[in-house]
Amino acid sequence: ATNIAETSLTIEGIRLVVDSALERSALLDARSGVTRLQTQRISQASMIQRAGRAGRLMPGLCLHLVPQEQASRAAAQSEPEIVNSDLSSLWLDLLQWGCTQPQQLQWLDQPPARNLDAAQQQLTRLGALDNNGLLNTLGRRMAQLGCDPRLAAILCAAGDEPDAVASATLLVAILEDPPRSGSADLRDALHRPQAQWQRRAQQ
Image (tube, rainbow, N blue to C red; front, side, top):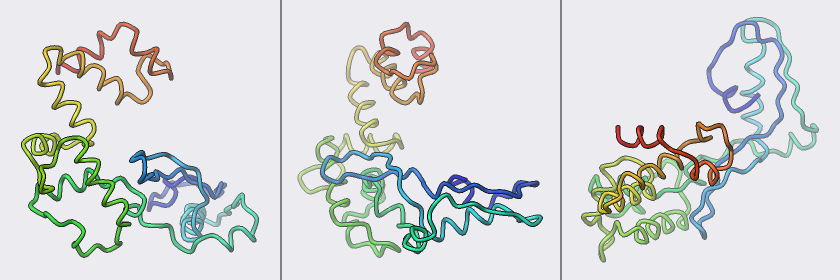
């Protein structure tokens, strides 16, 4: 079972679920501004949801691969994703919509102040904000692209360079997961002929 088993998905014939009691979660390091995937224990609520995939249409069984003592000590509920997320994209959108003080919003789940500060600092480093913390011309261009602010900054910068196609090709290569060449090594993939990526970048 994975997080997919926590949805309302019903698959006929499922009578046995084997639950690792683990999940891969994206966690933001506010100091570095980098989001990393981390394997961690799921909550008790997630265990119940995963068990619910077995026996929806007939009697079933769920095996949780975790000692009962550890299961009983697991958190009752999973943390809201916004608590551990990179908020720079959200901050960019809020500023575009006219919300100049995102900290004052009435959140259903209040994100940590350090994550909000990290989002503002990220946009400042990318050159998207003016001295008053509002979107400047570059910031408005980035917001219109609708992608991660770092990638948007690359696209905006590439558009001002004479070799914009090559920069767009590299960006497409970064977004390939994994590269379509079949190689898991991005550096090797970048040094191979990239005719296919160039065609896609020009579309």
